[in-house]
Amino acid sequence: MAQNAFQFALSLERLANELTDEAMQLVTQKLALQALSGVVLKSPVDTGRFRGNWNVSIDTADRSVSDATDKGGSGTIAKGSAVINTVPPYRVIWLSNNLPYARRLETGWSKQAPAGVVALTLAELESQLR
Image 1 (cartoon, one colour):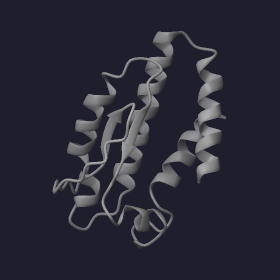
Image 2 (tube, one colour):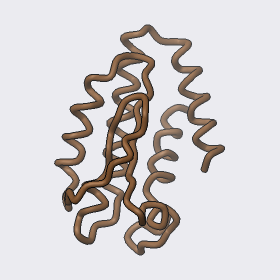
Image 3 (cartoon, one colour):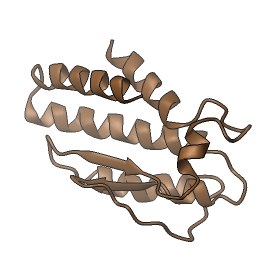
Image 4 (cartoon, one colour):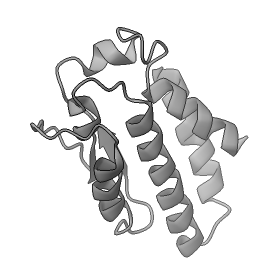
């Protein structure tokens, strides 16, 4: 999965070289919103805690864990969108989920997400950049 993330970063770098600052900001925000929606809505739901623990931050990962639950995902997406919409151009947007079982869910532990959530979302975004 690290190789895929590297290739995705290279695709974004090529795109950045072709766009104005304003256009790059819009593209970055759009991709981040798609990524956030993807991981949240692909997240398996039992209590909604995994969905409710997706964090969005700028420049450094938010390593917090909360008791928040969000079975539908709309609250988590709205909260993250508010952060994404303030991001200036050329900043790093982090999406993170720090629950202790997040890695297990990404590697197929849940029948609701046998192929994970991050890998699938990343593949969808990469296909848009080809």
